[in-house]
Length: 69
Image 1 (cartoon, helix red, strand yellow):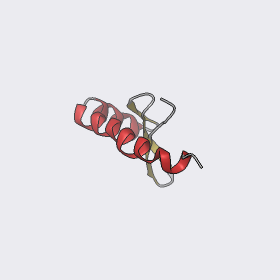
Image 2 (cartoon, rainbow, N blue to C red; image 1 turned 180 degrees about the horizontal axis):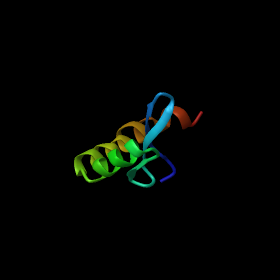
Image 3 (cartoon, rainbow, N blue to C red; image 1 turned 90 degrees about the horizontal axis):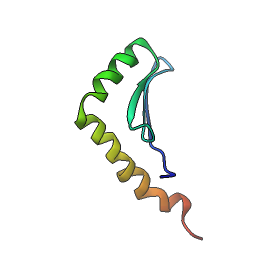
Image 4 (cartoon, rainbow, N blue to C red; image 1 turned 45 degrees about the horizontal axis):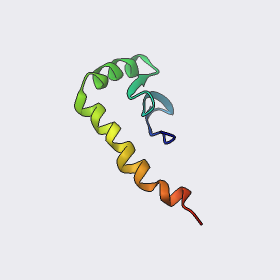
């Protein structure tokens, strides 16, 4: 529960959309980001894939970063 997976998309150095595993959905920060967030959030395969990334990437590698010495 302590591990958070964040996936952000940028265009021209401006973050326009972000997936946050604690929220479990995309959040848009610009007009384009809001439209894409709605589209992504309504597609269960996209949301499921991002949620799976938390287990596949974050939880798999947590021992590498916070291992016992």
